[in-house]
Length: 278
Image (cartoon, rainbow, N blue to C red; front, side, top):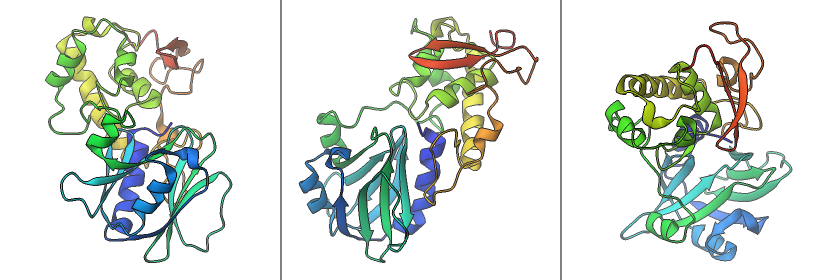
């Protein structure tokens, strides 16, 4: 599943090309991909809207639209497991599993492709989408200046739950998934199954520093294409070449050489080093 660095990469790619553009046509080919409102209303309300900003919140791409008097209207894209949100010319060959096509006033198209159909498109104000249960309440962004080691410690030290389970909890930290949870724990030398309330302030400080460094590096490397992730131009990222534990179960630890352990934690395959992580 695309995580914070992958979603941020797509948003950064699209921002200079979409801001100021108007959506002139919307074609939904698989209505189930639209989770709010009804697909017919979704298409009707999108047409004629100008895109005023493209941002990211957690694993969601947010397109702020014009025409709202109070709270902004948002086109929200969640890529799910295999979703791809690309900007292409209208003449570009169509790929399979193409679920939605938005035509812009310059003739280019935004195309949403999703093999497994776990992604979704939403339209509405943030309050409306949260109230409808279509957009979750999210915790702090790990790259925001206000997300300090002290604030992370406060979120962890009262929780008797495995560290990785809390890192995957979008109410604790927004945007993390399996890849960067495993990688940040390795960098911080912390076992992912360690109970969060046993972590010292010093240990949480290492985790906070590891998270920030890791996510910035992954964004600079345009994300991890470990499966089907592609950027807004259909290109692969490079971060997968630098992953130290994710997907390497049984292989030698890059620090100590011991085979990396694999366990099931929080419903996800988890890889770590029993010697280097405590």
